[in-house]
Image (cartoon, rainbow, N blue to C red):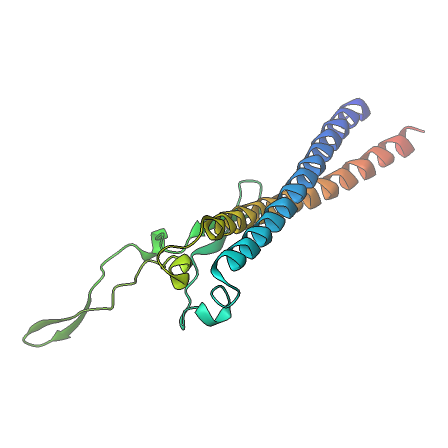
Length: 179
């Protein structure tokens, strides 16, 4: 590969890297704003409902996650994070729902407990919760999505930096060989 081609590729990669860094900074600011907004809304809800009405004593005895973070490998070999609803089925989970035991006289069906969809945690605090509590939940959910996006960006930035170093080394070797 010629030096001008390497320089053009290096410039392109550098521009992409700077764009990713700018996007990461934007997402960081948005995440900070969502978290701050969430805590402020939560404090408004505590004020509206009373400090003892919104706290750890109202948490369910058995909590189940509403979302999960799934990882996959992108086309370029990089790891990719996604936030998915906990009730969503992955392709591995699709299949027969009933367990069956074989006996000589036939099949006996044993019903499996049906996995319940995760319950909305807002129901722990009563039926009529203030709007500020719903806003807090939405802010924190948006923060989770932003955190996954930021993790993906950071992985891409790390990959871009390693590619940039490799191209710089190749360019140095070409310049030393040409001199």
